Length: 202
Image (cartoon, rainbow, N blue to C red; front, top):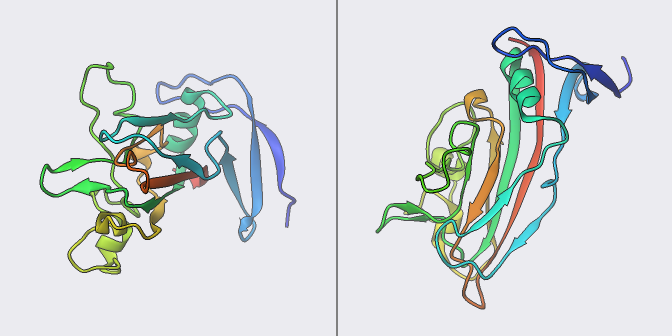
């Protein structure tokens, strides 16, 4: 088996233009010898959110290690891509059933760059290829209470978590993370966003 290593890659954009070469890490162990392209960024750690009460009033704009057009070209030309996202919460509501608003969500390539005064449609914590605004536990009926679609919507002061891999390529990469309902002294959240991982040829 080949060793994992960094390599120069020249992605081809959807319009057929070959982009400038960038250095990418190729992981040969993650998928049993299949080369996995790993694109890192500055949000690969638990980032604490506190003091932001308004829905979506906290924002974290992800800064990737390579240009955005290169990321999109790599995702579009790969057979399979995924990106892990997790929200740990303590008294921090994620979706308000009464107002039908998302307090905590993320945006993808199609929603992130709308004009600042436009409503940015939220991407929920869906797991897998489906673009469903629902958490992984809601899809699999494994939430810690039966009347919620996300663990964080229990909205108590116990640390809980919603997480999963996003595999819908059209919704990748995750571009920004938004949160709210952390303004109370006892409310807090932590977000973690993993690297983009792609393999295979589309």
